[in-house]
Length: 335
Image 1: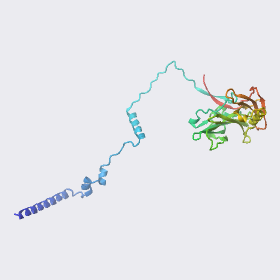
Image 2: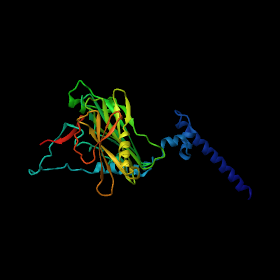
Image 3: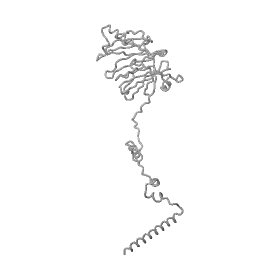
Image 4: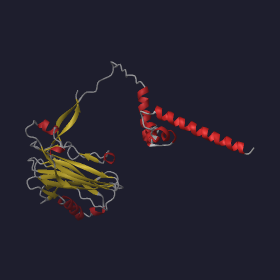
């Protein structure tokens, strides 16, 4: 009784072996034209092989990685789907057209001594150019640039000289003048790295009548207190030299010290007006002292461009005529 199950198991084993051999024979017959490949036929269906990766690539992650990319994609999608209607504007007959502006050549120092560089947008733009002033011979132009440094709340300035194209007419050579055509620095303000809240600006006063000198003023201010000091300076084109006319300030201080007023103890300043029309080698300067209300007039003075002599013109009058030698372009609306 015990031997019958044993013989039965052997018979079943033999039958399975025969069946498996027959199946292999069938596979060989069917795939006679193609060799058997384990990776392709078996492993690729059950394991993560190279061929499986190639046949089944991983999904691409198209999600934006940053908020900037997200908003960019959102804007692109919105632009594709949104139809923006074309604007329709019907002009009202009562509307008045703004006249086109035109550039005109005008004398620069007019009114005398009042031209100054506008610093209202200096902190925002960090750099401002002054208006270009053309020589009486219309062959050169001078202008200044003011630079602002927010880290120290300071400002410095440079004065540049340019040659104009003499092959063009006067207005065209001024309009076409550009810094890329070549400029020369003739003066720059001195800045101390330890200075804070100090602004130094350069403004052209005027050309001399013969076009050989340029008078300009250096204004020094301290932010909490305002304007501090004005220096009168002359550049000689023939020699390329700079002369600070400090003699006129010294003469004013000396005169009033003799009259029991020590100006070193008070706030006062000079206001250069221009080249003297009677003596074209001298520059007219007015002086004022601050009083908190109406400034005290310290007199009209003049000094030659070499700084040899400064003299008092009047303690009461301001009726002195100065020349207007330099020219500039100014915008005016057409009528």
